[in-house]
Image (cartoon, rainbow, N blue to C red; front, side, top):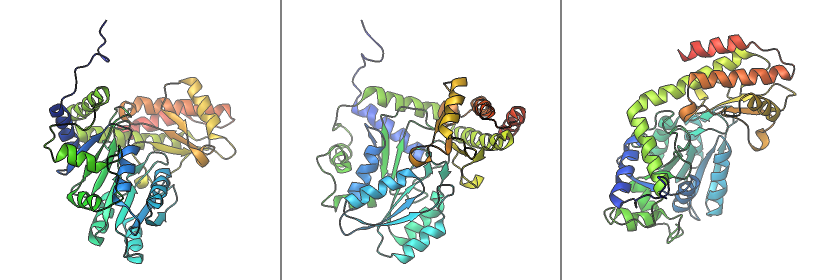
Length: 366
């Protein structure tokens, strides 16, 4: 018997290219966009291994765990790495980046995460891009968590390599990603003898076999399900309107922050300033002496479908993440998360005001 998700007609090169064009429009770019058939770590590693090499110097901005991962890859490529680390409860500033570039004029590559869903902060890419462009370095941005949740203007901000994934604010699958590549970036990668070639990590393979050939012959068999899902979530964003989608995420973040403060019980926003908080996810600090993992487990016992998780790694005991992105960027989901966390806090002896949290979140959203 036939199955609609299994018995799919082959995805044509023209269809694949049309999806790339729609992603480019979402990113506000006229640069080449390549959709890659794998989770976003695939193009992220491909960008770093293509752009960095022995003798190059990279400024790696660390505002969360992904920045740490990029530093490891850069060092593995033989690059000299200057880590600009800021506390995870804040964001990096353009002034800090400018100072690092002034201190190390040899820097020719800058890597930055736009929004760190893991820590709940977001960085001012527009202002940082201006500084990096004036310096002349290649600028790589991880926009996996920020795309569709907040403005992302690749060309206007001078981003040379911008990687996105569909699994967060876009509301799509995790198995497909995309990267925009500027002409400067293509030149840099092509001139790097250590850049991946004849490899699944190779951006150059896509350029030579796909882009330069007029996008008529795909270098790999297309993953139909993931590509069709990516197309569907772009269509959904287009139908709702990108500005409306971003406003919905901003409202979710504001309502979660305000509601958690009204809830009480010792819960507090992890990111100190609202201006530094990412709209894709809100991180909360558990009360002193209370394990965040236990609170999340108790909250999920109320409703297992809620987008709540404890922080990762060293943050597991102290951080709670409310992942209000994609279809979960609604007032109802935010209020349900606050109610479940309130019940969990009360079970741990905290004094909470569930009605104040519900009312404040609703007023903030409105």
